[in-house]
Length: 502
Image (cartoon, rainbow, N blue to C red; front, side, top):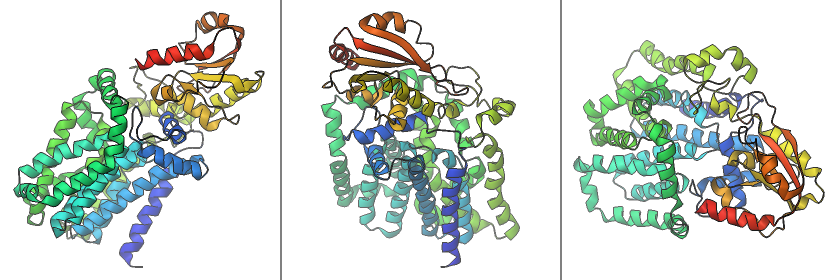
C-alpha cells in the first residue's frame, strides 16, 4: 500500500475506535434510537416523523443480532464514509497528501464524533450532503452526465433518509443560476436524472398522500413547539462550535472560492453556503440541521491552504490546531465520563450552559446524557411486573412516550411489545388481541391520579415500581399495574387512538 492509502486507512480505523471509546459503559442507547430500532418491526415507506431509510438500517441491525455495539456501528460507518468522501474530494480538487491529512483531521475531530455515536438519520444526512456536493464537483470536472444521475440517486436516498436534504437544493439552485453554470438547465440529462430521483422517492410520496401528508403536520407541530424558540444568534454561534478546530480551514475555503484561480469553476459553492444558511435561518432551523454543509468546505480550505503554505512548520500547526481544540471538547461534549464524575465536575459543564435542559433549568447532567440512562432499569422492572400478572399474554403495556416504549421493547426478556400514543406507535397497536390487564408507564409529574382514575376500571390496581436511576431523565417514572379489567379495554383503546389521530 502507498503511504497515502496507509494514512487513509489509519484515519478510518481511528474514527471507528473513537466512536466506541467516547461512550462510557454506564450509558444506554439514547431515547430517540429506540424508536428507530422499533421501526424495523413495522416496515413501511414512511413514518410520522422520518422517511423509511433508517428503518431499513434498523432491519439490518436486527439481522445482525440487535446488540448495542451493532447499533453503534452504523452511524460510525456513515461517519467513516463521510471522512472517506472528503478525502476523495481533496484528491478530486488536486490536493496533495498534506491537504488530505488536514481535511481528514478537521472532519475527524469535530461535532461528527458526537453525531456519529447516535443511531439517528443525522449521520446519513451528513454523508448524503457531502456526497451530493462531490457528485456535482465531479460533473463540473468531467462533464460526464453519469454524475448527474449519481447526484439524483444520492439525493433520492438522502430524501428517503431525512427531508432536511431539500435545503441543499434551496441553496444550490439559486447559486447555480447566478453563475455560468445556469447553462446546465439546457442539458436534457438533468431532467432525466430528476425523473430517476422522482421515481425512487415516489413510494414515499404515495405513502405520504395515503396518510394525509403527516410530514406537513409534523413540521407545523415542530415549528409551533420547538423551532419558534430557536434563537437565530445561537444558530450561528453553534455553527462555529461544531467545527471549531476547522473554522479557519472553512474560512480559507470560502476565501479561496472567491479568489483562487483553480477554484473559479466552483465559485457558486460560496453563494450556495450563503443561500443555504439564509434558508435555515429564515425557518429557524435547529443548528445541527446545517452540519452537512461543512465537510466539503473543509476540503476546499485544505486544498487552498496546502497551495499557499509551503512551510513544514506552518503545515504542522494547521494539522495540530483541530487536535488541540478538540481537547477541551473531549472533556465536556461526550458521555465519556460516569454520571458521578460529571456531577463532581459540574462547574465545567455549567459554565458552557450544558446543564440547561429544554425546561430552562439546570440539572445534574446534560439532557442528552440523561436521555441515555435508566432504560435498562425500566425494562427490567416492567418485565418483573409483567411476569407476576396471571395470564400476562393479555396485558397491554402502555407508555407515555416513545423512549419508554422503545426501550422496553428493546431490552425486555419477556418479548413485550409496549406501545404509546406518542409518535409512530399510535399506528402499532394490536387491537386484535383481547386485553385483560394493563401496565401503565407514567412519567414523573403525571402520576398523581393514576390509581384513583384508572383503578376503578379494574379488579386490582397497584404501583409495581419506579425508575430509581439517580441521573436519568426518566427518574421517577412509575410502573402501575391494573389486573382483570371490568371494561372493554380494546374498545376504549380504539376510541382513544381515533381521538389522538384527529
